[in-house]
Image (cartoon, rainbow, N blue to C red):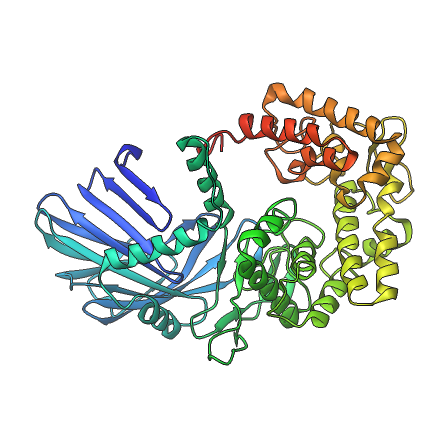
Length: 531
């Protein structure tokens, strides 16, 4: 048991009191190493468990191998399987674990079987317990080096990044890194709570994506293999990143949730304050394409997860290039990858559906994919234009206008159409034929052509009045609805740019008004329920 009253959480550090065990647990981290410190408040036999069984967030640990190296060190691996959102079916995770003092004994287990011999422990539900006789005030420290490629690299990652047993030194180094990153945006005025809110939000902006390469530059390539729905029967390879003149990798490889999530907001913010990160992530996604042909939507375990829809990473890469930030990867090779990803054989979708979309201007049965794809096509067109690729520009700029085929003049909103060219339905609050949204929420997602949308609606005044009506309808619910429900929802990504549409309809004061309302009502706190 624990209580948040007994907890400190900061970027790069957590401290919590484990009441049942009468133990303070602290941890900090480097990029590839977790560093724990346990402080005991009473005399006891302490057990530190490395439990490699069961679920970890949305995947399951299996095929565990643990080997004792010496009295203070063991290493091994396990398979991460059954991920909820798909990806490579078997992702290997390797580790090297060290203690600052030798335990009096180890105890291993596999399922219900226990053993004192931990020279080798195998199984699908296995682990190791380190046993210590401790007095009140005693401390035990533990470090875990991680790798997606090998135990040797896990060991090297630990030794390179965290060779010291000085916990406070590592904690302070982590704090300084976070302070520099968060300090790139300086604010003045306001209340303390507002500043806490601002920097907590910035911290969240920088979470959710992490490098999967070793300090050596080795990284897992799980892009090859037969696709099975959202999964891949992956063929594991170890590759090495290109090195610079200093002998270090030119960039890092990343795992990430879908860049579908970031195309409405974070892509812009990253480039403002952390351009080197946007450059690295773009280079990483292009490296995936070099290895496996497709640019991932959201790579998992060094492979494809096929999470979400269309080619959302296009917006990240093109945005990086258009801002002059794409420095770590060849520009023309990048364009070729972005282009082929939006054509048959690419990540956009089924080849027959892509052909239909190209010919008819809309995605069969899905307005949500249509508004995503046309925006991505517009982005590709801008990159083509800047590179002097006229034929490509003409192709993609034409395709970016296909959304107009879904405009329904009576309700003046977009609706999905079937292959027969007829509207699938005209219920503006239905999520059918949309991606986690509906007509009221996502008609405005054609951000590349708000003037074109305004023209179809009868001008800027008509567009602004309609969108303003949607905000008024959503305000009593604090602009928060379940997926595909409600007029305007800031509880999910497709609606995140809706308030900014007024800027492009010559009504900037309405953007200011509704952004502040959303900030107050939907995102006013720093807790999971309102923050």
